[in-house]
Image (tube, rainbow, N blue to C red; front, side, top):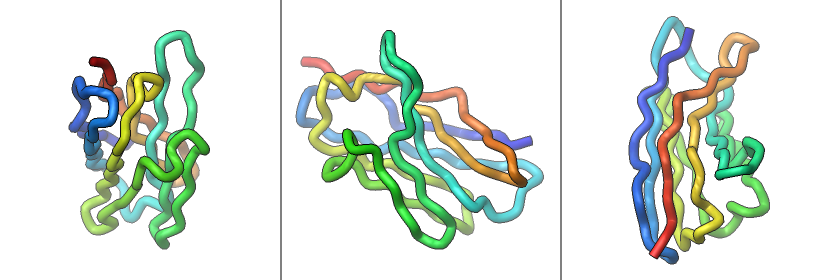
Length: 115
């Protein structure tokens, strides 16, 4: 089992920034892949970004140029720096980890972009 502690969500005005953090713990060693998903109101869950332990990053088109994913492998922690936020970024953002050939998701943290 994997447990997550997510933080950093909140209310921000359009054009603002937020930084999400997620620390994974449990009976795990290194985590090959960590990332973030989001689900907006009335929308399906979508992958925002992921990063491998080797440093490979991938972003959804909607996140490219505005969001940056990073991680601390030693701490099994992943971060998502979100800049130039738009109202359409409003969603519950959930941490993701691929561990021991299984997918795990956190409970999520709410991000609301509104004036």
